[in-house]
Image 1 (cartoon, helix red, strand yellow):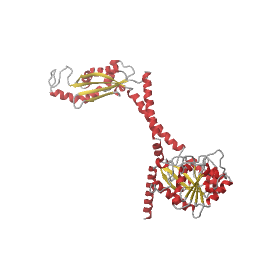
Image 2 (tube, rainbow, N blue to C red):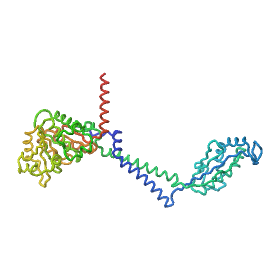
Image 3 (tube, rainbow, N blue to C red):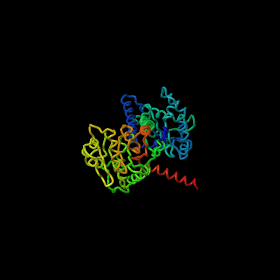
Image 4 (cartoon, rainbow, N blue to C red):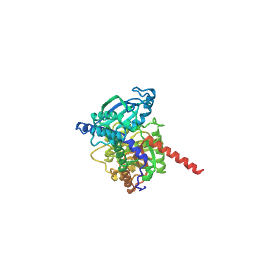
Length: 472
């Protein structure tokens, strides 16, 4: 077995972790938004919120001179030429209104303490309305009263500033300054965005940390890369198939992807075990809930479909479920327990499922079956009547009982559930098997996601294409 302990983290692993934890990431993002809103609400209730108002007004630029007359007509009423002059003055008028000269004059007149021209200019927006000589004014300010006063003062001093700087011009107010309260203000609204982003980033970071601390098998090729094992089969993830309470003994499922994969796995397993008869294999995994019993049961059916005599034995004494996958009830009178204690003979203990498949189930009882010489001799004796004996055992990473079967088993079939047990746990289980002197014939990965299988198939196709190109 390959003892390499390096774990390569790929972009695909991170994307898989994010997709896997998308609900958690969404919940943390929503939690961030809720916390942001709660902080704003708390600040508001305590009077600590940075209040903000939007003050708006509008005015029209005129081209009158210092005496109050218009230059084209030299009268108190404008001509078309005077209106054209005013239109041409709009950009210059906006510049003057936002200048340090204008804002310093405003601050002095209003006696604004601690306010600089930059404080006002950063919150003041002056915009020409279309191609007219109308200017729309917007000011974001902390106080409605003070903000209204600022725009009133700005328009009131406009004529004097225009005469001083431009030598001509005036301003007439169209819409007097009015204020509108902004809920939370721009500063407090940004807290919502910040907290939402923090929640999102934290969720993604937790997902990334998870694959760093507890990496799982998310790439079937890692079975060979990390563990030095051959993958004999990859069973697609199918909730309906894995959720079946009974294993089908008929060929009604023939043609499905899972049945085809199991048949292929049975052929490969037969080839890897080599020629000969009475092959004993025990099926195990690193931890619970990896599907070893389901794989063992369906692989036995697949081997029997090939015309081989197969015996299934349930050696998972703490959690015997193999019998219930084929029988409605499992009784002590027809179990390994009764056979072990000599209460029945072999013929009475074994349940015939098909012409090529037999079952020896186990029941839960206080008095456990010992993995002693009696048990080993029993397996050897039973194996004489079969081509293959498949034994379902407890996870080798959790219980050491399974390795006692090394005395009678030719090899071990290791089952891994996609994205379930962590890589260190899998590696530890395989090292225990290796140290026990057991030959691990290969690995079956079940519950593989469709997207992962498609990605790996595309990679294989690309690799084959590149290989053909190099040969040419």
